[in-house]
Image (cartoon, rainbow, N blue to C red):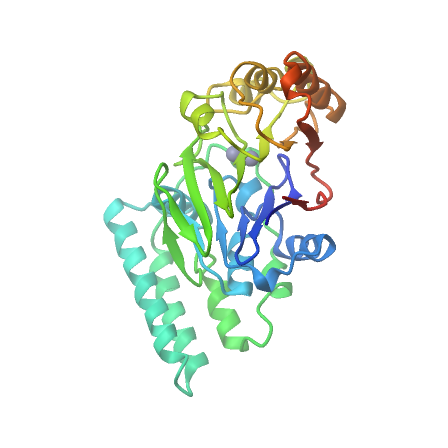
Length: 350
Ligand SMILES: [Zn+2]
Ligand SMILES: [Zn+2]
C-alpha cells in the first residue's frame, strides 16, 4: 500500500504526506504548523505517526511551518546541505555567514543536540536543554545576513505561531530557548540529489529540478512495488526530470500558469520574467508538452499542482492536460486530479 495526501499545493503553500503501510513522511511544510495539523486531521493523517519531514527547497511556500512543526512533532528534517544552509540564512537574514562559520554553526547544533540527548536522562533535563539551545542561538545571532531575491513573493511568518503550536508538555524555559533560535531542529539529516536513500521502508530518490533556489529537488518514492513522485517548481522539463518520472503510479506534476493569463496578469514585469524563466515555473503548455511527448503513460493518477491563483484557472490546467493525454489514446486511462491551495485532497491510495 502507498498513499499520497496533498495537504496544499500552490504559490501560497505546499505540503503532502507520502505513506507506506509502515512509514509516513511529510514533503514540505509550506503552511503554518497549525494549518498543517488542521489539514492532516481533516484528511485523516495522524501527525504523530510522521517519521520525518523532507524539504524540496527553501522558498517560503515550502518551509513556512517547517521549524515549528519539526519541533512540535520532534521528528528529523531531511534536506540537502545547501538547502539547510539557505534556510538557516533566511531565518537569520541580518548577518553574513562565511562557509567556515556555517560549518561551525552545524557543529554547534550537533553538540547542542548531543547535550539535549544526554540531558534527557538527567533530572535537570529542561535546564540543560535550554542552556544547550541558548548557547547555539547566541552563536547564531552573530552569523548570517543575506538578501533573499524571493523575499517579495514570500508570506510573513506568524509571530504567534510558535506560541500556539509549541510542544505539549514542554517546559516554559525550553520553549523560550527554542523560540530564541528559529533554526533549531530536533534532528537534521542530509541527502544528495541523485542518491537514493531510505526512511523506514520507503525508498526515496531525490532529483535536481531547474528552479531558482540553492539546491532544489523533486522526489520519487517507492515502497511495496508502488512508485509516487512529486515534481513542482520546475523552470522547464529538463532531461533528468523526464528521466526521473518513468514508471510512476501517482504523479504530482506542476501546471503553474496559463501563458496568456501570466502575460496579461497583475504581476510586475520582473516577477513575470522570473516565473517564465528556465528557473521559474512550468506553464500549462509545458506540462501538456511533457505529457504528450515524454510521459510513459504509466500513472493511475496525475495530480496537477502548484497552480497559480493569479495566473491560472483550474479548468484551463485540466483541459490542457486532458487534451495532451487524448492525443495519445493509450493514455486515456490516466485520471487527472487538481491539487488545491485552500483545502487538502482526499488521500490517493494504491
Ligand atoms: Zn520555489
Ligand atoms: Zn513553490
